[in-house]
Length: 79
Image 1 (cartoon, rainbow, N blue to C red):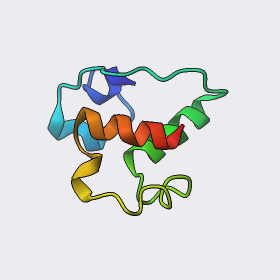
Image 2: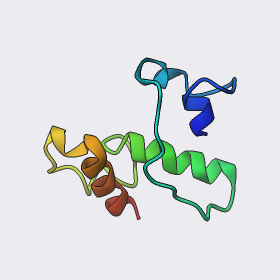
Image 3: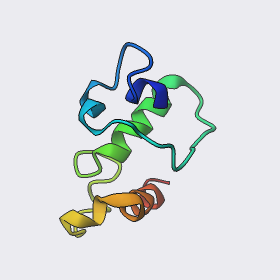
Image 4: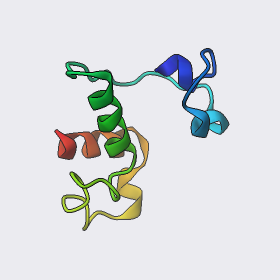
């Protein structure tokens, strides 16, 4: 997936084009299917819209989602 984000492979990850290159900071594995992994990725990237996360993150400030610390905090809430 990181290769898709960096434009090395076709199909997918078009919205990340402006922020290339991407570096891998964290690996999450153990998903039952590719669909469940992509669902997890979407929820992680859209915590306020996600059915799973929106109640947990409702009181968070806007900047609490940014950077590595913000993504890790969102990850903890998602897991």
